[in-house]
Image (tube, one colour):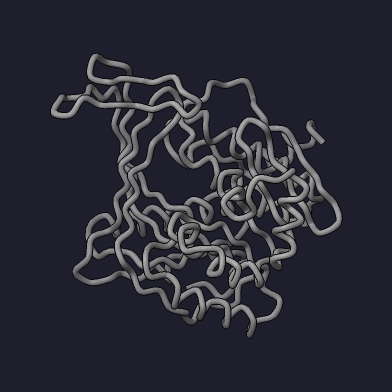
Length: 319
């Protein structure tokens, strides 16, 4: 157990089962605004490549921040099976503190099935019911709260109390599927104690409705958020700190996009790490898009992440 934590990430983690497919007679692609894939029911779909990896928003961000020079710890309620041991073993190898990876006896570790076609992915996400609670972890400098499954509300209320009684913790919120579905009132309770909110454009629209970009940031700020960050895929990313609205374009190093799984977490770890290292807002956004770009050009999540030295070298040429 470590005595000092730069960032504590909180959220579910599990195992990703990723299948890379190519077009076959049994696979039908509709070229609509949002491309759709149809598999003929009862058929066998050829899989070009198959792999498994440890995964989860909290896990990915802890690993990404560790690459960028932060001492990271993760709090997650996990299963009690060989997959849970795999998670702990692989995180320990990467020097991530696993003291607060709590095994739940008699339960399986979450497993997510992912289909990758032409660089885009569809995720079948499973979150087993877990009971999270405030643990006796050392006071972190940053707290990163993200995706938790059904029944997260009681823990979130306790986490708000913890934050209010531990002044000085920088709070980052990147809501997951169930948190987004919980409704605006439940979200707003946590936004009131949030220093940095990271959303994609689709999530932002669900909270603010369709408005000019600047107004969406302003509306989030009115809900209590001190800094809002909105990612918008190839269109880039913007951030608002209550006074300044800053944006940067997406970044590419020229390599082909292979798999977009983990891109959002790579962005978050890049951006949050830059803020921790006291980089200016525009430079922090650059850290995020560069890290995301590195991730989507690699097949396995986490293999395209930047180290702090490499990140500073690349970003220095962009800013």
